[in-house]
Amino acid sequence: MARVHIDHVALCVWDLEQAVADWSDILRVLSPEHVSGLTRGRGTGDGVTMEWATFQNPDPQGVSIQVWAPASPGSWVHKVLAKRGEFVHHICFASDDFAQTMSECRKAGLPIVLDEDSGPEEEPWMRWNFITMQKAHGTLIELGRRYLTVGDKWYPHPGNAENSELLAAMASLVK
Image 1 (cartoon, one colour):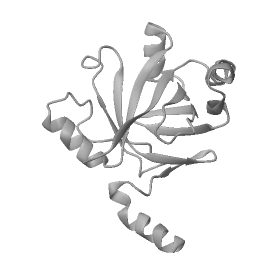
Image 2 (image 1 turned 120 degrees about the vertical axis):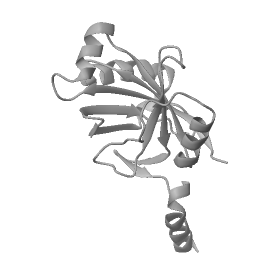
Image 3 (image 1 turned 180 degrees about the vertical axis):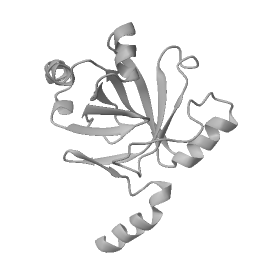
């Protein structure tokens, strides 16, 4: 059975740097441990170049806060922002067995957005898909592969089902 947890809430914003500054102000008061674990990234997924900053929860199964913005002009994201303004884009659930989780969602008849799972070109190990906004009452539900953050980078989690060989190799180094 796959282990799944709520990983992050993602906000789509116009100005990434302003959002980082504003959320830093908020989190310094409400949850200071989030501010010390800021991970930034940039990538292209589903035809859109985006950049993001994630305030990582130090608890590996705690909820992080991500802000992201389109990094190239004229994308569908700009049209959505112009129509809706800044908004909660998705709530991400991370799984240690992404394939099994997707299979269970499809078997349960949950409305999945993409026929084929997607991910950023720069991190081919990362996979994601979504449950529709209609089913989740206005917010996408992202289903993603569990990851680790080290410094400013995301890495495949060695405990994921697809990484059993990596986990075994790491365990042998500890002995």
